[in-house]
Amino acid sequence: MNENKNILQDSHGRDHAYLRISLIERCNLRCSYCMPEEGVQLSPKSHLMTYEEIYEIAKTFVKHGVTKIRLTGGEPLIRKDIPVILEKLATLPVELSITSNAIIIDSFIDVLKANKVNKINVSLDSLDREKFKHITRRDQFEKVYSNIFLLIKEGFNVKVNAVLIKGFNDNEIIDFINFTKDLPISVRFIEFMPFDGNKWDMSKMVSYKDVMTYVNTSFTEDHIERLQDAPNDTSKNYKIKGYKGSFAIISSVTNPFCDSCNRLRLTANGQLKNCLFSATESDLLTTLRQGNPIEPIIQKAVQAKFKIRGGMDTLEKLQEPKLHNNNRSMITIGG
Ligand code: SAM
Ligand code: SF4
Image 1 (cartoon, rainbow, N blue to C red):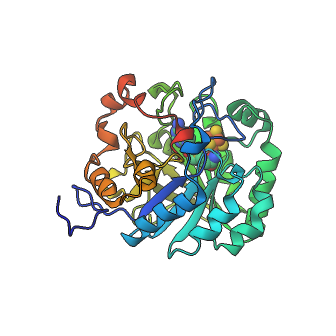
Image 2 (tube, rainbow, N blue to C red; image 1 turned 90 degrees about the vertical axis):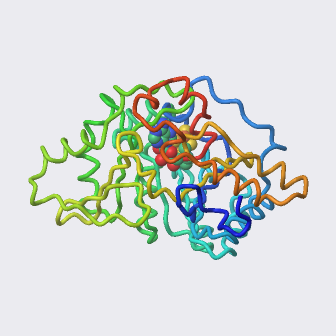
Image 3 (cartoon, rainbow, N blue to C red; image 1 turned 120 degrees about the vertical axis):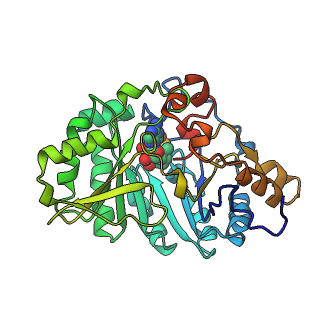
C-alpha cells in the first residue's frame, strides 16, 4: 500500500468525500423494508460510539478529505445526546446534514439551525394515513406530514424519500409528484433494496423505468424537464414545468451509480462499511479504544471497495439471497 496516497481514494480511482454516520440502531418506527418484523439484535450500549468517539473518528475522515457528513440511523433524533453530537460536528469544516423520519423534528428546529444543518431528508412512503401506518407499523402520519410543512416554513432544504413497493404505493407516484406543485421540495423515489430480513424480491421493486412510465402517462413530454444532476448525485432529477419542487429516482438496483460513488458509512457501533451492500466491515471503534491510529484500517477498507454494489455486480447476484442476506438489516447500517 502506498503510504503517501490519499487514503480515501480506492483502487478504482474514486475519492470518498462523503461520510454517513449512523448514530443509533433503534427507531420510533418499524418500516417493514428496513426493520425485520422480529426486530434486530441490538449492540450492547458499551459497543456504541460515544459522542466523543464519533467526533474523533469524524475528525480523522475530515483531515483526509471528507467534506460532507450526513447523520442517520435508526432514527438519529431519538439519540439523547444528539444536540452535543451536532455541536461537536459543527466545529468541523463540513456540510452537516441529517436523514430523519421527522416524527420529533419539531423539537429540534433551533438546534439544527444553531449547528447549520440545512439539508434534511425526510422519509415518507405514503400520503395516505392508513398506508403509512401499515408500512411503518406506527400511527404517526400526521406528525411527519405536518413537520414537513414546518421544515419548509423554517427555511430548511427538504427532500422527501419514498421507497416504492409494487402494489403498495406505486399508485401514489403521481400524487407525490403533485405534492411538489406548490412545495419547494424534492421527492425522491427509491428502488426497494435487499437487506437482511426485509423479504425483498425483485417482483416487489418499482424500477426507474416503471416510475418514468407512470410519469410519461400522466404528463406530456413538453411538461417534463430533466434537471442537471449534481456531481456524485445518486439520483436522476426531474421536474414538472411550473411546479415549485422537483422529483428524482434513486435506482440503486437497476441503474447503480457506483462509478461516481463518493460515500463511506460508519455504523453506530463504529464499523466502517465501504458500500451499502458490503458484507464486510472494518472495526474502527475497537482500534480507537485501543489507542491505535485508525487511518491504516480506513485505507485498507477503502482499497477493498468493490467496483459495483459490494461485489454484486449483476442483477442475478443481487437476487441471490445468500449474497444480500450476508449484510445487516438497513436499520443497523444507516441509509
Ligand atoms: N430513520 C431515518 C429515516 O427513515 O429517514 C434514517 C434512517 S433510514 C434507514 C434512511 C433511509 O433508508 C430512508 O430514506 C429509508 O427509506 C431508506 N431505506 C431503508 N430501507 C430501505 C430499503 N430496503 N430499500 C431502499 N431504501 C431503504
Ligand atoms: Fe426507522 Fe428510518 Fe428504518 Fe423507517 S426507514 S424503520 S424510520 S430507520
